[in-house]
Length: 437
View 1 (tube, rainbow, N blue to C red):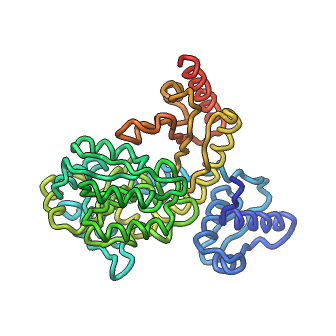
View 2 (cartoon, one colour):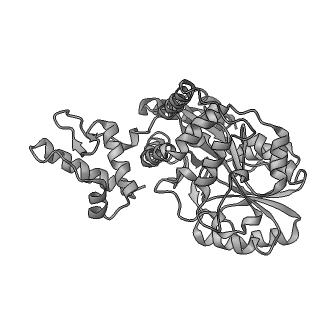
């Protein structure tokens, strides 16, 4: 947990310049490009640090002039861990786009799937002449479960054997269970990748029709899959006619920058499907899930389902994606999440001492913790209900009852005091569970 993130280096450098300005130094701060060259970091990293300082009120951005230190405000050094861009800000922006479209009397294009939104998503995922997507390859659903059920029906996979990276997103598992899928769980090691030998033997002896693996970040463990493991999986899948459903639900929340390598970069695009959702970035007002896949049966299946999604909201979402507004927000989230997660780890250690085993994740907003042997966590889940800490039992991430000794913790609020209170409730719940057993 002692590792320093690139944005923190830029942040501290700018704070020093602001302190100089407080003592009578120059108010104008370096431009994005100048600071990028000086500190040898990306423009996105510099932008993230400036955005954070703007949020704290220590820097003002003047159009066509640059950034200026706000002196005389006695702002003090803010704890980076406290600053998490509020999701409601993006939701308000979404509502503002909808109102503007309404005032313009813009009539949403009629037809299934939201043409503008599908076009925006296709463009966002297109990376090269080999890996490109068309709007007709993008299929929308109201949520992850409905989309998965439609996919399995379209490809005649209901009741077949599927391999999932384990632990696996509980929403995906519930959809697979409803479709009577035979689920084989492939544990990911501490480095974020699967045992390639075990996977090879599994594909050789089992009638596997589909694999569901992380794009780059495994949830809820929060470990990045190494590029070497991605390449080995791609080589292995080249020997087997198996659909790969790449789980892209959480990969936007890598702590540093978006991963350079995704699993999709190493597999045959003819057997590739990508599952994503707008909820991680946009919040509960945009729970829509999307699937990228070019098989003709997919378009037919989604047309038959005829999901009713709000046309105006789809247009607003398309505009926010195309304009870069959503990516700008994701950049701010990536700046704030590491510090926030470090603070959760710090308070967890202070309240529960050495009772729980965990590592600082490399992305996401969940902390995967191992319980002491005498606890199973059921009372801990109940003890934290309605608090600033969401606690999910580990067995929710397995169809075979694994991970009973684990919990997934997510800090929902903003106030450290409420977090500490929730952690104290967690401690009481674990103690009660241990006594009862």
